[in-house]
Length: 322
Image 1: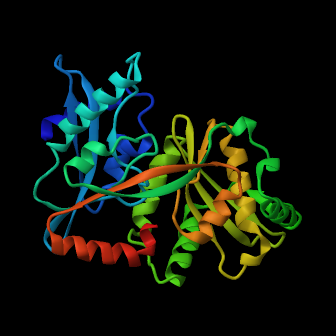
Image 2 (image 1 turned 135 degrees about the vertical axis):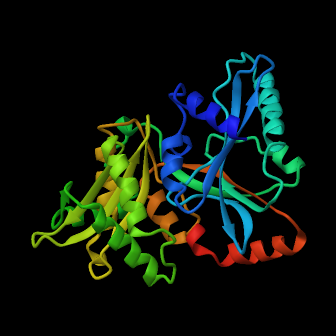
Image 3 (image 1 turned 90 degrees about the vertical axis):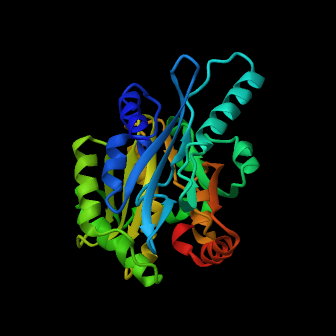
C-alpha cells in the first residue's frame, strides 16, 4: 500500500476538486493519534480513477478504521466522469468501487466512515456486507443567491434581536474556540477526544494556507458570546465548529454567528456546508437557514456478530458521533 500512498500524494496535487479532507497535508495533520493510508483504483492504462482514503487507530490492541478528529468526511472519492451516458458512468463507478473494496485491510475489526455527500452509489459495498446509516447535512449551494429572507421567521427574528446587542469580531484567538467548544462538550458529558495542542497545530497550518475563518459575536463589554470555526475548501466553506459561552446562551449569538459565517464565507467561496448532524436540536437550528437537506452515508462493517452488537449499542448511545 506504500506505493499507492506515494502515488496518491502526487495525484492529489493535480486534483482541483479533491475535498480538503482528502488532501495529504490535511490527513498528515489530523492523523496525530493514528495513521492514514489509501487504496487506488486504476484503469487498464494505469490512470487513477478512484481512491479510498482511511485512518487507522488501535483500540484494545486491535485495528479500527474510523474518522480522524476534525474530519467530517472521508472514504471513497471518484473524480467526475467524462462518460456521455449515465449508464456508463454508473457502471464505471461500480467497477471502481469493487476494485477499491478488495484493497481494504482485512485485519481491521471495525470500519466506520462518513462518506462525502457526493458519494451516492453504495450498492457495491452492500453486496460485500457493508451497512450504512444515512446522515444529513444542510448545504447552501450558492451563497451569492442566499439572503436572510431565506431563513425561517424564528431564526430571522433571533438574528435581528442579537444584532442589536452583539457585534461581529474577526480577531478571535483559536484558544477561545477550543475553550468554548470544550466547555459545551464537557457539559454534555462528552469531553473532546483531541487535545488543545492538536487543534492549535492544525489551526496554525490552516491559517498559514488561508483556509480557515474564526468569527465571534461579542457584546459591548468584550464578552465573546459565541464563536464559529469555518474551514475553506476550493469552493466550499464547512462550519467545522460552533462554540458558545454557557453563561451567555440566551442572547441569540449562535444564529447570529452562523449568519455572519455564511456572509463572510461568501467572500471566499460559493458554497456553504453546515457539516451535518442527526441531533434534533441542531436540525431545528441548521434547517432554519434555508439550505438544502443533503444525505450522506455513514458506512460501516464489523469483523463478527458480537462486535456488530457492541457497535450498534455504542452508536445508539454515542451522541458525540451524531
